Image (cartoon, rainbow, N blue to C red; front, side, top):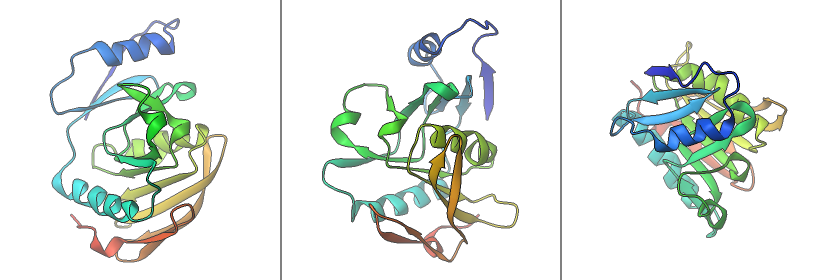
Length: 194
């Protein structure tokens, strides 16, 4: 993964940063996010990464209301953290998500899911949960394929400030339960291991 600082100008504001993110021509096929005010360009995820996201998505479709959607490439804005983040999955109401061509306010999300890659694990473990919690997103599921003790899935909830409470944590192979409004169990035993 490579990162570049957009500007050293301390007067640069959120709108300028977003306009730069929207108007710049980025390498085709890359994932471009603003993380803590730094534009970060990442390669597209590997196959195993996508398989995990697809299995979670398939499971979620069985329980979400018709007026909600599950989005794989939706950018969510967290201006207070200078973030324009693209989770692997975002569950949010469809009508509200249709108001912008490029991004939606993070507060619209009911659940975000991140699946770590070797190159972005730190962001998924530290920077992004702080941003998601500060935006008030009720649930954050981190599927950490590169956790130091082996692959894990951790469900975070009850955001306060920039901190979540751990609602559940399992090693790959064990189920993890998502509370209402989802009320489902995800079988991490179906996730490919590297």
